[in-house]
Length: 110
Length: 115
Image 1 (cartoon, rainbow over the protein chains, first blue to last red):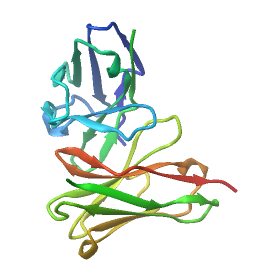
Image 2: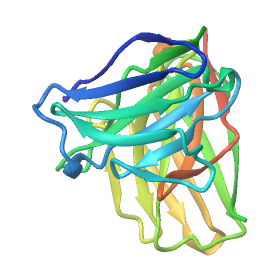
Image 3: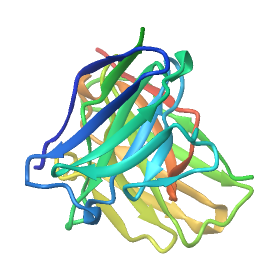
């Protein structure tokens, strides 16, 4: 089974920029993995920020963007706000219809 | 506006079967895949599997031998059964719609396995 890897934790200063990444044990992440990014705050269900690599929902703050970077999926937060402190998960889809979540990144805004 | 209401689970003993239901309100049931996702306390998310309105399913290989996802399209509902549960299956279980990403989620239901 594929393993999806994320940074366990990252810290960003208020107003700063940070990039979270999502890698696959099977090789480079491509648009064909349809990367999703989720934000989860304590006690809440996750919510999708980014789908299909870079598409945003109506509720996704403009400061979040998704891309492919160096063989990984990436979520970039530009202009971090205190309310962005949360856990972030990526999800990749594989050719046999499996979906695998990454282990999550705990983002601290400090 | 689409809303998912889920129920079931609760407290189970090892080897029992966890059963969950998820009802879809306020939107189309066909044309989407409907997923189950779980999260053990203090841990990350795990995709369990998905189903569409006609009953086509995909499962997480690590759970496939114990999981059954089914649908009652006439009631806009779908279901999860997880057999032979152990303490490792203790988690919050979510149902979700796969529209543009997982764009609608249920409220989550706790399933606790304890002897």
